[in-house]
Image (cartoon, rainbow, N blue to C red; front, side, top):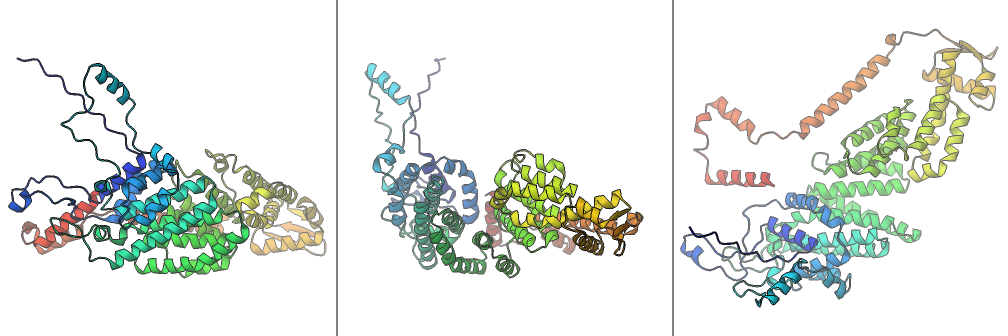
Length: 575
C-alpha cells in the first residue's frame, strides 16, 4: 500500500468586514446568488447560464426574514464604526443602481483612508507563509486558482436586497453618530435616510413591472428588489429609522429648535400611523404609536395622550415585544397621572413580567420606580425585596426611604425625604405623583393611632401627624372616616376621636375584593398564554375529515396548487 498523501494546505481566505458579511448574509437569505452550473438533464438547463443570471428562492417572507436577520446582526451593529459602514456601502451597493443616493451619503461619512483601513484584511500568517515560499523558491501565487474578485467589481454588488441593506446601513450610521453625541449630524442623517427609504417605497409600489434575468428571462436589475421583496422588507427598517430620528431630536441641545421640530413632526407621525394601520403594518404602527405617546408625555399633555389611547388600537398580538413593553409603560404612566391607579398597576405589572430578565436594566428600573409609586398611591407598601433586586439597589434607594416614611405615617419625615431627593425625583419624572402621597402618609398615621389608642384628642392627632392645627386634624379624620380608612367617631364638642371595636374582616367586602383581583390576574395570564400558543397547522381540518369519514383519503384529491401552497407554508415556518 502506498503511504497516504499529505493534504494540501488550504489557501487562507481573506477576512471580511463584519458589516459587509452581515449584508451578504441578508442577500443569501433573500435568495440572491450567482448561478454557476446546472445539474438538470433538460436541454434548456444544460445550457450555460447567462452572465448575471440570478438564482432565486421560490418563496420568501421578507419582513420575517429581515427581523430575524436584524436580531442576529445586533452584535455586529453594536461594534461597528462609521468606517465599517462606509466600506460596506462602498462594496455592497451599486453606484449605478437605485441605491446610489444612499451609497454616496454613506461613503461620504469618512475619509477614503479610513474606509480603506476597514476593508478586507488578510490573516496575519500570510506574511510568514509568503516569506517561507520565497525562501524555498516557490511562487506564492497558484496559477490554477482564480484570485478572489475585487470587492468593488459589479458582480459582487447586492441584487436581491440592496434597498434593505442601504436602509440598515443608514440606520446604523445614525446610531453611531448619536452615541458619539453628534446629535445635529445624526438628526440630519436620519432625515436623509427617511427620504431615501420613502423613495424606495414609492418605487416598490409603482415600478413592479421591471424584472431581472431569472431562469433565462431578460429583465432589468433595478427592479429586482421590488419584484422579489416588495415594500414588505422595508417597513421594519422604516420603523427603526423613525425611532432613531425621535431619539436624535430629543437629544438636541438647542431647546427652541428641538421644540419646533417635535411640534412639526406630530402631523407627519399621525399620517404615518394612519397609513400603517390601513396597510395593517404592525411594525410602523406600533412604533409610531409609542413615539406619539412619548412626545405627548414629555410635553405634559396627559389628556391628549389619553385621547390617543382611547381612539386608537395597539396591535398587541402582532407587535414586537419591545414595542408592547413601551406601550404598557406609557399607558401605565398616563393612567397614573389621571388617578387610575388600578389600571396603571395592572399595566405596569404586566410590563415588568414581560421584560427581559438579563438585559434592558434601565427600562426595568424605570418601570419598577413607577410601579412602587403607584403601589404607595393605592395604599399598599411594596415588598422590601423589590428595593434590593440585582442592579436596582442604588437606583431605588430614594424610593425605599419614601416608602419607609409612608409606612411610619410621619408627615414631617416624608416632607424632609422628598425635599432631600427632589432633584432626583424630578429627573425620574415621578415628583408629581409622589407629591400626592401626603394624604397616604396621613392615612397610614391615622391607622397607627387607631391601633394604639381607643380614644385620642384632636390636638394630639395634629401633633403626631405634624398637622398645623386641631381643626385641620378634625377635617383629615372626618375624611378618613368617610373614605373607610378608619372606623371611628368624632366628638366635636369634646374634641376627641373614639375608635370602634375591631370588626371581623371576613364580615366585610375586603376578602371578596382580594379574591376578585387574584381571579382577574389568573384569567388574564391564562388568556395571554392561550394567545401565545401556536396550534398545529390545519388541525381543525383533520377533525373535520374524521367526522366526515375522509381520513383515509389523505392527500389523494389535492390539486397541484394546494400541494404547492403547503410546501410554501413549510418553507415560511423554517424561517
